[in-house]
Image (tube, rainbow, N blue to C red; front, side, top):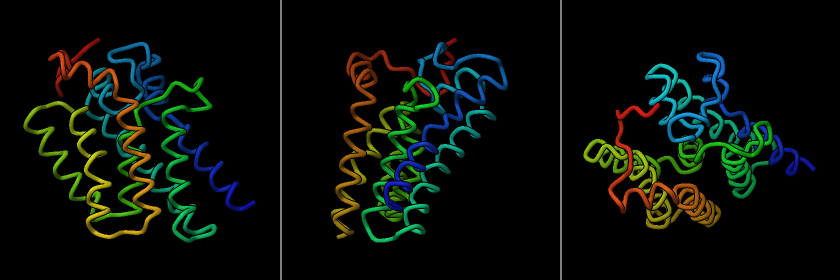
Length: 197
């Protein structure tokens, strides 16, 4: 029962979409009807500016951290923290509070992976940040982070639960970025700093 409760709480926590809430509070809009239509930090940056975007990014990371810690403190072991982290990401992507239409889960993924496997996440994150700095494509950096994390977890011989979680997260990320992948291939993807009302 404790395990199921922890997973459910993690999903409900992940379902709190700070991008939607902050956009409604700051500008009285549903951010899913503006810009890229994504309820995440990058679209928040385009529509609301740096301050709200930083707040969304930090709070979405915090959701992932909190979910993993909840799993660790309630039961522990390798698997429950992983499942709680996955539940938080699923909540962010498909939030029960907002009609199951959420973001792409990258910031929450950063929080989850950094809490579960800090060093692999750090290395993958630095490479992803470098790619964003060079190309200004946030989506490409996000996909690089998602793809490299399981590789570094495997190379560093981390527990099997973490490897499986990172593979599932990678699938989540690529599935949620399908349209971005098409735009990248066609040269139509928005670059960081480009505003789209």
